[in-house]
Image (cartoon, rainbow, N blue to C red; front, side, top):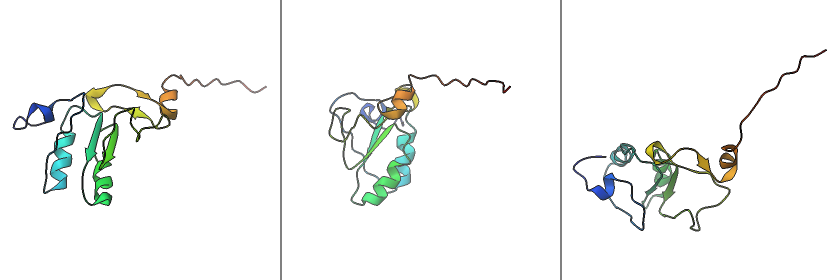
Length: 114
């Protein structure tokens, strides 16, 4: 992100941590979040949930939350939803149909008609 911010915001954390930054311009918040080389999960907190969903859809992350946070074992996760990271937070996908497809290799076999 930016060198003028703290490490807690600039680096990926693993643990019960929720850095909170306040912004007047939502585009500034999206640009700052997307400047990070990480992208596992993000959250948007706002009184305007419609705006929250719009902003969350612009985040470069595998999972975006609006007015909530959860771990992969929390109540807002499901084995039917794919889980994946963006950027430097991992490769591939697990859970859901997309996760299952990670373990497949498509093949096309053509047979000549007689």
